[in-house]
Image (cartoon, rainbow, N blue to C red; front, side):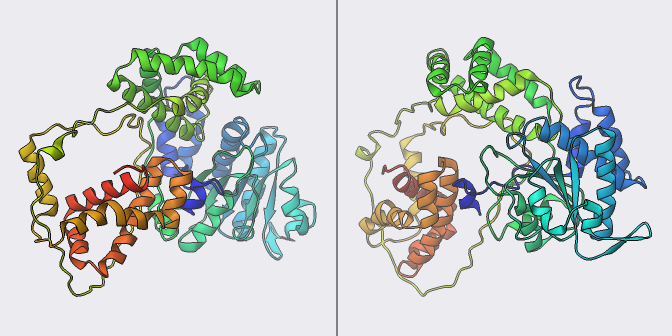
Length: 489
């Protein structure tokens, strides 16, 4: 799944996964924001969280409000986005159908809901099925959800597996999910479609840990584990504006051209002018700070705009502008402070020694982002000058404690054989071709573990030192990544 996401075949359904508790806390943090009428939303959310007896009605209000204000208003999938409501049984699905239909009518919405379940069931003392509630045959559900006015698909087990609808953008979950069922259900959103850049899950019943455990066997996932502070956007915009890499006129002109469908020949000159200022007016630290905060702004706004009904024109324009500017900002050029060190040292002795084969279980653990970071790292790792004696001592620590027999063999393994094996690994090879360095590094480290298991068969001592010495493991990882991904030794 992760490889398919990186290569653009499907979307990441966990990127904007939000449990209702985090959604509630997030709404509370903007109570004094004049651009967001938080009081109304907080009242609804508080009633739900505190266990109001009409929870279905209030959850339906949250769903309908969110869909209109965050999905329709933002023209998700070019204004064609649909939502799925996952319920815990037929009775609950029918209740949600009536509640959502009532909410849509009250706000004079042009949209309608469809309910999907199997068989015939009781509704207020009368037998009903899909056709009697929807007003058309069950066989037309999949086709009708693609057409207006139908935008909500309310499900009781049906359509949670094997259903392929690229127009699904948002999912509201009010059903316990775990294991493969959770993966199958949330994955209804992942189908790619032109104009579909993100998806959103609002979960009333499950938490991030449960969903993480369900998805972890299928791909390493990064899941938001807590709410993100919207006030960060104010701070980030302030820092970015003060750098004076761009002017308000630059942003407005770029966005106007972009929204009018102009090509790169009109857009790029504005960006190149800003890049020239970035190069000339900011030192290395300034460039790193600006690029990191720009990435943080885009990430934070992308997440929060799926939850909170912002009407801040400046944020929306800057998000569009920075999305195109960031890839053009060059990384700082770093001086090679290690130049000449090989002329000042001698290698002593190494010996490789084979031992009995051991079976070792390697765990491939998931990562977690907690919460959305407000800024990234816009530069490469800082140089760390140190005394030659200490450098040699650290180097000896990497290889020390083992009387290696063949120093050339060890160095060849690190600089030639391991990188060559990594390039044969399909997952890493695809990531190298199609992903950014960060994702490529993640795939590299996973592939390196697989390569080292193979090496263990003939070089047990090398493998043991790799597993036992974290510094040596990091050294091999960095060296092999430089050769296999960057093409430099």
